[in-house]
Image (cartoon, rainbow, N blue to C red; front, side, top):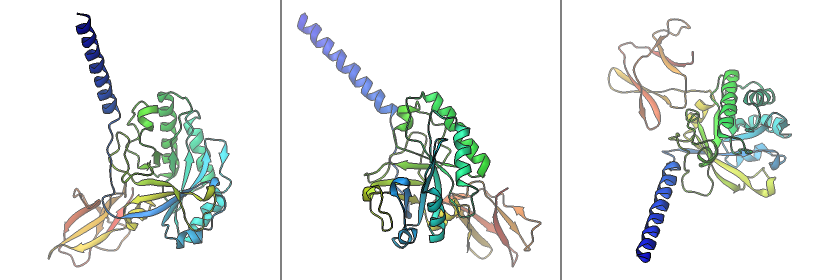
Length: 312
């Protein structure tokens, strides 16, 4: 009887352990997502990278870069200003980011970030928030402050900010919240073939795939750089940088296909039979997604048709 009870207890313990492991796996279940097509090389930098020669970075093939501007509401990266002007002068598509501090009021952080970054120009990438520390704060506090921060950034810039984090952060420290999955994702997941996404996100816009790269023109941080990959073409990157473009092709005798990037969030397609600032009419055709591009097929019997992407 004692052996039977012992075996029964062992079996029950194994069953409980198996159930817990199963629940743990479900709670942290995430998808690994590879880029669907073209990608572009980038880099993110901060004061640890010291002085950077951006012309050399450009020649090395880097297309875009993000520079740290602030940390919380009390620290300015001393190299931000020179990096911000240097990237643009060198022809590197530029973006600015802030380190999000979970124990600091979100609106105050956003205001501080915006005051240091200044007004965005056409061709500047959306602001990014690096969300990677919890500082012992509760999930509800992090959600509250982060919500205030992203909403204030969007209100001030008119741009949807990018959220940067690593795969398990929201599951471990933010209670599995998916409140921010509508924001573009920058996933920090170095050393893997394809990144793993936090729950709620189905794709990524930028992937930090290495923290030990080497780029000509950057010598700080013990010679190691953060290397990134943009998930899309140059056209997609320019759309994300508030420079949407249209591709128009004939699709039969009386039809044309109009294609633009899915990154053109908030833009709508309009048409006009004369080149005028008035009389633009919204195209109501529901676009289909073809190779990560929005596409509309239009029938036209006119010799001239003008099209534009318009942001109300």
